[in-house]
Image (spheres, one colour):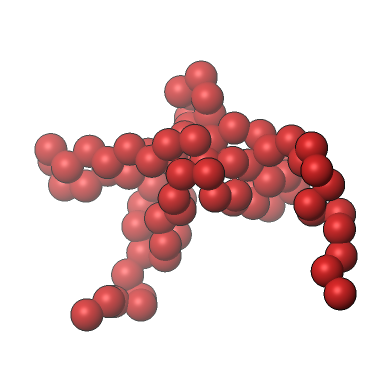
Length: 79
């Protein structure tokens, strides 16, 4: 059964593997190619990779890159 109240502590890295945010609490781990929104930057980021380290506990690292909206999907309104 799925625990709706469980949160994961993740570390968000950029494409050069530098830490963008540490100890971020999220309920769902994003998949590769999904978009995430960081409020302090007010920008969307594309998830490049999700890395799990299960050696000592469970560490999750999310590698992101800044999303460039080539098609204009963010600005389009769907009727």
